Length: 421
Image (cartoon, rainbow, N blue to C red):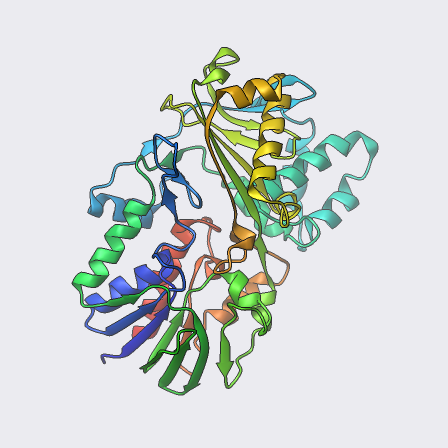
């Protein structure tokens, strides 16, 4: 049975669903609040940069089947990330293998855990002794930096699964992730799908098998089915928020609150030369305790660009900080890591860019993580409302690739099976 379908959001999940459904003969309209498709995938080349940079998604963590299948279809190349992961503390550099005493014990204790709890409670219960102070800090920083999670509410079961199944292989896409978005967008249009950008959805009036969607610019769209793929931050926002979507009649929004959604600050700095090669030629990632704690190079490419990252509560502290101040703090962080003068770094700097995903009105955060009741919440949200309103997106994905483009693509694909069943 063919349906007319509206999809809210032209990110990876929305475009994946639109491509599949339009190819199956459904009439599909996509409404995107931004002036571009892609959502939290955004490849740009600001003034002064000699290469494209990623504001959002950048890496593929392992050989992810859907992402790699689409890249192959699109003829887009990807390459393995090179270089070592290095810890920098109090001026001392050490390889990952030397990280923190007690990590194996922590993983064993996690493996034996029978009942879920928050990371904060777990560390307090099993690793409260002073001898574990460095271990507690390391676990917290890893949860914040990689999972953008708050240790006060993140599920130990979820990070246990992720840390135990961590993929050593990582890849990035030369030329940018936007190539994947362009491919999906073109496929959708070839199937007759219509994509409207700069269309901020304000209201959804609905009854079984009928939806009427109203946008901020006064347009109205009608269809039989609706798929909502906007970022979790927008779905968690109070009704009074400028980008909140109001459902009439109201739907149960409580499950959205049971999923964590973390903040990210990302800083990209381009220099006249890769000065870090004077320290080590194999730097892939640098992990520190600075204000902007995590940095990575472009290895195996030797371009003189460093990317800085703060996630979770660390990033939330920058909510009211302007871009120039963030860049200043990023330079200070690098100066401390490399034992250099800030003025020396400024003399080498040729371009800079910073982004705060938590202040982006159409995402209000970076990506999701699991809290104690997230599994139940996802189960509820993956069931349609009266076979009329469906939800998809990386926050609704269940699996090992949480918080990734793969998660969004997978959720977008899954919702199509649900709608067609």
